[in-house]
Length: 168
Image 1 (cartoon, helix red, strand yellow):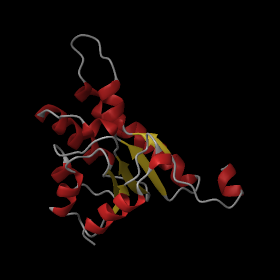
Image 2 (cartoon, rainbow, N blue to C red):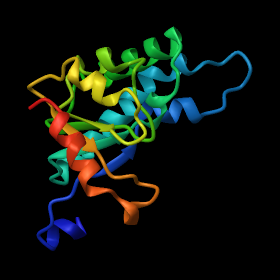
Image 3 (cartoon, one colour):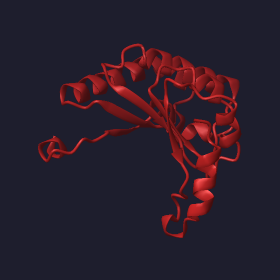
């Protein structure tokens, strides 16, 4: 609200629900999959509040997507996001990843009804190859080309060379 009052258009950033579940500790006999419906509902309530406050888009940070993913984790992610994205409350949704590539879930992620996907082209060894294999024209690609761990030592020529290889 303060930013809006100053005339600034902001993009709220939230820890993504999949990463939140991956970082959670559960009691014996309790599994993350048991929380999918409640998690999707809670995030939709946050989406509704942000939309009421005038947000046009929301960024969900999902660094857990760069891990090696089991079939169960992929199923959990897809179940969660299919429920969550069933009602985006009119918001544009960006799923942002970093510090690796998402080779295990890329094909499924680009099929979800999100508006934008942020990928790491620095530490994501397979990211360029994945994007070259196909990226949906109806989504915006946020290309991470500067090393976030040391932004002061960026090789601009190398960054631009990566951008030139990304299909338009």
